[in-house]
Length: 437
Ligand SMILES: [Ca+2]
Ligand SMILES: [Ca+2]
Ligand SMILES: [Ca+2]
Image (cartoon, rainbow, N blue to C red; front, side):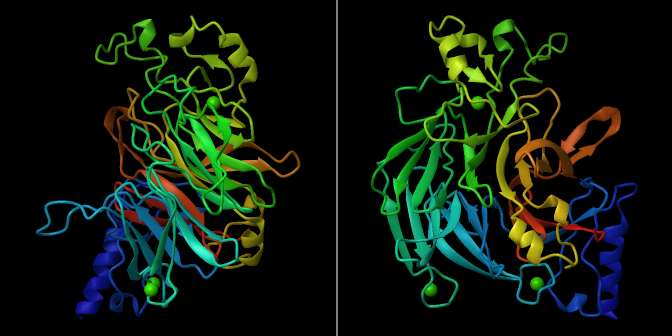
């Protein structure tokens, strides 16, 4: 009887969303009540028709970046673990290793893979020079690699490949992207503030190293804050999302505190960027935003026209202030091998990008707070637009919108579904398709 009550409560909770489009709680089954209670997503999230959302990981406060291995084991980074009961201070950041042992879509088995320093951020599974697999990770000032050789889910080897001191740490943008591919480590360092001229510093650039942490080289410049880098499947192209700058219209006397003035320019500019980063190229920041929009603050700069001429435009511009953080490409191989499995991404999504937008703070109305599918044209091999898969803004009276999630990063798992993290709810969510295509 208690089990039946549990199932009834779960069903009511899942159904109590009024007119909210199809967000579906995990399916009830005769064994559902024997498993840990799987919570429902927050009320107010909407999914694009044809997709559904469930909770894959619960109770992981400040969950940020994700990595997944070929067996579906999930790793989640956290820059700072909130203090536990009786603790006065955080123990730093960590990487949690998670398994969905019974295959129901909820990760119930977890270990702390790495108990690490504060600011633990980027993750990338990749082999070293000998072919051995490691989980590489970044902090604000270092890049390390860890692996578990004893099979207990806890890393017992943990090596600083690029120790603190070789790159600038901290700053307003303290996050460090990390990509380890074809024998190269890539990491980017963002602006220390909003639109700082850091041309001569090591900031606002992507750097490369060899796998031993040597041979430091600048790769690309003019970057404001790119939190993840990945190769487009089947290519050596390095892609990332770059945050646009804040307060674009303030030099024109915009005043968000004065409703009569508001910030009609800043609300719309500059665009967020989806970039293909190429060696030796310049991506504009802080002087040039988006396609080729000069920042008013640098109008007196004598070489502004030259900088504009050198600017590499985004491959796709996105709405201002959405704050794109992590993303994943839908690898055509994974789409192919998962074809026909329930919830897998359909074949026409192969090669597309699933991008997470953490949401705005510098707008008069919140915007972003969503997960989108960036559609790549398979013939021209470029992004041609996007559609929103998960909208995390709950609409209220008078068009007011309240964020209920803040998406951070996405991965595609072997069953073909997509996971994304949320540092506001401390969860990882799963996106599945609901119709076979
Ligand atoms: Ca499970
Ligand atoms: Ca171990
Ligand atoms: Ca740019």
